[in-house]
Image (tube, rainbow, N blue to C red; front, side):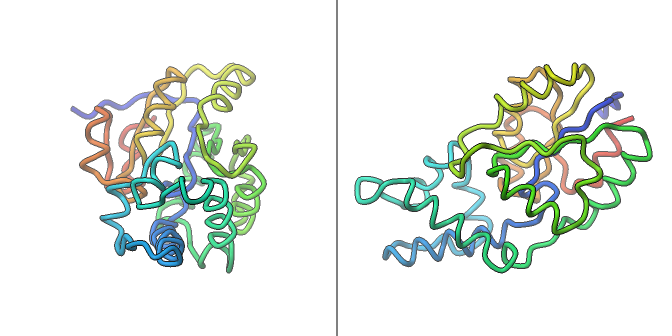
Length: 216
């Protein structure tokens, strides 16, 4: 049953939700795997099957062995390669700009809450000239992408947010929304499969344009 709710604040995930970087992420992780003589994931479906948080566990599912090297070495190598050539020439999802403008016109307060390192996040968003749509750009203090729940909770407290929804593309986004006590919408054209997201028990959309059906 479709339920439309009023929200004053929209909290967006970035990677995979607004920013379409999934194929680039497959390319980057496969480059690291091949360098170590490991089997590459090869395609988006296999990537979506192993991706998740904490990131160290995702790396292990992908085939990395951290008895041979520290996780931090692989993580830094990944980030360095990911940010070459403006993140592989990735673009925003097709409906992203329209939605940001639409919700701005509706008087919604919009914020980015990302597991990306904050300086890298700001640099990416600035490339597209969309930073003006957001009240805050919230990222982590390092490159290891452990969790974003704490900075989300701090934002909720500081801004006295009462009616918010988190829009993301992973189970972790659902976990964060649950920890923050807010609603969640998930989009299935990002970093995890629709089948996996459906287990969260919240609306799962095929494209972010569909969020307008749930928000007033």
